[in-house]
Amino acid sequence: MPNSAVGITMDTVNEKDIDDHLSTSTEIGSNKDSEADKTKDFPRYTRYMVVASCFVIQGLACGVVHSWGVQQEYLANNVYTGDTKKIETLSYIGTLMFFSVYFWGMPAGWVAEVWSYRKLCFLGTLVMALGELLASFSKEPWQLCITQGIVFGIGIGMVFGPSSTAPAGWFTKRRGLAIGITVAGVGVGGLVIAPLTEALVRSTSVAWSQRITALYILVLGTISSYFVRVPKQDKTRSFNSFDWRAFYNRRFAVHTAMVFFVTAAYIVPYTYLPEFWVKHGISSQNASVLIAVANVASSVGRVATGFAADYIGVLNSLVLSLVVAAISCLVIWPFATNIGVGVVMALFYGFTAGGYWSLAPLAAAKLFGVEKLTSNSGTFYTVSAIGAWLGNPVGNAILNGPGHGTQFLGMSLYIGVLWFASFLMAVVNRASYSKRLFAVV
Image (cartoon, rainbow, N blue to C red; front, side):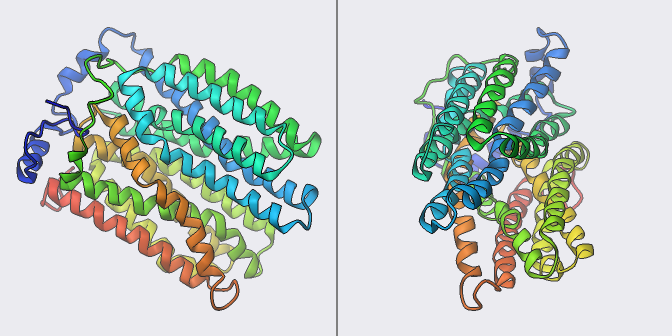
């Protein structure tokens, strides 16, 4: 019988049986003894090395994505000045990289669980470094789309899922904190690599900044990949072990929908809030500071919400984070026309939207078990990749509709509704797990 993506056997698809099975067999902590047995043969420091190495890999991969805007701005204003077609082509590169983080999640999850987390992260590191190196020799924007957008993007997709979920198997009591620290690497990577890229571009060139980036990705990524592993690699699984009937499980389908809505919403405020603030009289320098505040809040939120999940329950934490993110877009964003309210928006959105990235894989482990967390999370990401592709273009279409670039209210409502839809999905799964309001789940 094939193993399903949610770790259950389904000879016939019976949703009640599936839900009953999940509610009794996938409680985080219900099998703490067996999970502890898997880690007892390793030195205690191993788990901390796994967290640290995954933190670095997350920072390298996503930090470069976040810093692409620095190179894009320089190329648009100094290399392709006045060539609107080439400048427009440059705008696709960031979307291609963001899309790749999700699109390659499913195959990367399968390969990691069936083959090796360590080897896949090492291979992904090589592909990322190759993408940056090839980009440094690209002369036209369409070439950058292939090298920086697609090749580098494939490398990100190979390392993102495995490095964000590998630490989960090493912890039971502090699993939320471990995942929170791991994915905080995304924010820290952006805070470090963006100004580093800015300095390299201004002091050398875009091409040399990419070559230097390729070098430190290769060195730091290779060292970090060596320490990425799970307590036990399931050697009985094969590439035929995924069962598409998993989507007949209501919880699985609802969680997938939640990830889709968040993926479509998440990046849009980071892209368009600076323009919103500048149009309302805030200087571009202060707008950049506000985005930096949001990035710092995001890093703090990833750790803090993961820590909170260990005490109040991961599903409870997820519901709270999603509803606050929705409120920040629906209620705060329209009034964030000065620095004071802008700081409030940056703090609330950064903290709760960032916290989601800790809580989503933890919720998947809670609902479907930790054994197939990487392939499950990869499946959610791949299905929601279309959301990553549509988020910014739809927001831009709203902004450039009637009103000619002033329809930020429509954009904030669009993003707020997406976050609220994800909140409703989280509530459905939380209620399916326990209908007791104050249950720690």
